[in-house]
Image (tube, rainbow, N blue to C red; front, top):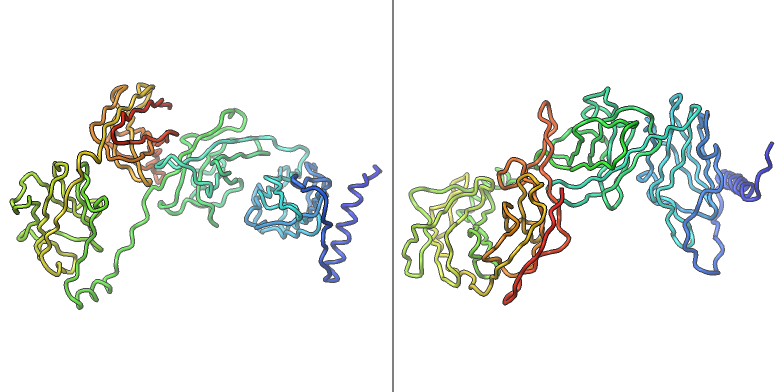
Length: 471
């Protein structure tokens, strides 16, 4: 029998002391203080069974560290692969953690227990990041690995709250019906990795980290690879793009609320999307109501000059995508005053409520000095399918420019700073389109990528930027 090291004997003694204290219900242990600040996280010094043990079917696992530890949200951080039917009991005391397993373990299977960032030392709170304990019920440890990254397809950004899921290819509909045997979380950069996987072929998916971990709602964020991956052949990092197959429906005011409005009287109200107190000459004017509305053809809205002369070139319509919004389009002239005359009965909601009175909305457009030109030089667009350059502010797309040459000259842009992103517009319709994964309809979403350097538009300045477009 091998002699135990002094450190291991100390750990075993602490485990014994911890068990006695559990029975007697005492006492608070205060770690010693003083000395230089500890900047190192705890590390494993002993385990029973030992880490990477073979031919074991443990009901209880003890892991000991070199210093006193504490845990934070350990059940939320814990991932056991393959997953167990019953949640293990976890008990952390002094410098050790005890894991009690209620399930019957599978034969010839490698189990990994990932603690995430739940373990840290008592004194300084140094986190032991991504600590994993492994054992096998067979004669060897599985060594399969998969790694990659997940990004949001529509925004090109990262959401680290997702989980990545593996299902064997023999179970085509498992993502809809079964909880996964293997899943892992993303780090803050959207990266993931699987280790200790058995050989085989898998379908890989991405879902929110909810209880079911099933794709049972098309409004959930979701991602998938077009083809299965083989543990034996995969070498490169995988890239997945998450999308919502359907947007969550916007909450509308209930019929009861609308009936109450009807009893009070005609109180339709709207907001304007002026920039400050002025109308942007590059966009339509939007009037947004609290509920969906429609026009009364007998009383039409009119855009007029200051002499109330109707401007025939104006186009006024209800936005089909947002039926509570009216769009007023016109080739606006800089620094010019306009009037929008809205008769009382020109607009109605579903209960035929109308405005309190006829409104005359007087406004002025921005002056030419509020805009400046821009020159954007592009390299590498020839290798991309239907690339579109999008200028955004506050996460909203303000301007889009299909890329057909290495130079984009923009005559007018409002002053300010714009984040730039590239849309790969597969169907060439000028907007981002989501993906699908129901029935026979399996389609990847269109991809968006961000440029690290923003475009700043300043007055009396030559606003130029060079961009390199990559696949």
